[in-house]
Length: 497
Length: 133
Image (cartoon, rainbow over all chains, first blue to last red; front, side):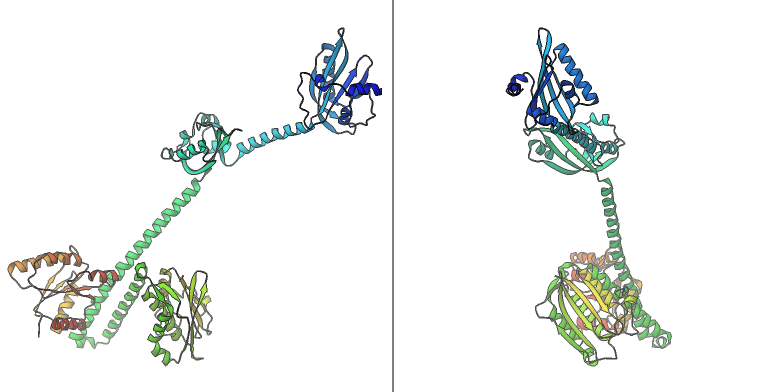
């Protein structure tokens, strides 16, 4: 027995598998030998390992077959039988159930030996190919996976040959273009491209072929079967073989028609708005100009009546008429001021020293500051500059400061503090008073509106803050207010740095 | 004292013309007034006056916005006429558009820019300036 084993182990494998190529890399491979005369079976050490049996394991030929079940057993029996009767070699893949019940794929090769027309022996190899089969399986699943991904992707995908002719198209592409797959496969990309966009990506296409580009994206228009233009984002990548020769193009198309339509709609809305704005401005110009000439005439006629017919002017209604005309002129002047804010050009912007302008304004208001015994504290250094139109800065400072004085509280000595601070890209000028303040919840939204007044102050005109806001905004700034009734207000002007 | 013999109003607004004429009378601005209702009428009138050997106004109150030929065009055309003497020209407009005021600075023949309405005080100032000049 010992002897036989040794003889068997020293069998020449290459002679054994003569004419059959077996790749033994990494997988366990053993040999077996069936002596049909003695009816004895020999397994090599590796064969026993594959069957997961002990080194001392012995079994009969019939018992060896029992490692295979059902159809696997039937297949192997048939092959073995044919080998014995017809002198046919076999090479099959079957599922083996090991001693411990584990199933594994094996490849088994059987070679019959005939003497005087009778088969006396069959020997062969057995190889554990489970790993290989699993890999193959994965490969197949991957192919399946790729196919599914490709066909079912919501992005329109196609594979084209180097002449841009469709080779594969997915469902989304079919849906997008309205052609059937068969129709598309007769087309090149040129056939579905919008005539105006035929040349759009020619150069990129060449760069792709030459290898200069790996992929490219471009916006392009296509035309579907019904003739509708489709706006699309096209991305093309080149698929190469192992040596780097281009094989195919992978083409992906994203339908961006909706986005483009939205953009176009937005643009047209923008145009309408800009147009309306222009007309509005024009309208404001005309209104203010024409109203001015009429009110001018009225004033002139009043002047004439007053001088030439003093007796008429003594009529009690005349002074009211005169007042009405005067107020009309004033209103028109305000309107014109507002209009002019939006038409002043950027040419007039200068770098202005904030402190200088504050001092100037305080100077202008000296009389009312003294009269109201107002304490004005200016905490602004002499080297803060803002880019602004001088007349606007004058007007803004005068408005804020005179408001702070105008809306003082009788309950306490008026105090005004003017200071600056930095906030993001703004230089913030704050004018804080301890005056009447206002209810922002009630009036906050209207505060900067035209002709909005919130105090029973006969000097309130409701133009100042409206104008101020307009001037600040015309210079890309903003204005805010913090206030509570009877506890002062702080106006902050944000100058863009 | 220098006196204005003939003043000229070029304006398409009859109320303005009426009022200005009356105010001129009130302050004794000039002896006579000639009125044109637009730039073209004024150019034609000036040419005819030169041709007929009639007196040319010493002072013009020129409106800007007028039909047919506006104030600016009138000034350009007036340049082409051979005027026998210097004319003091005031732009009189309802426009307080800085662009208009700026534009008027480019015309050396314009003495000043007056914003409507005209008042007796303004006329007196013009008269004094004319006499002073």
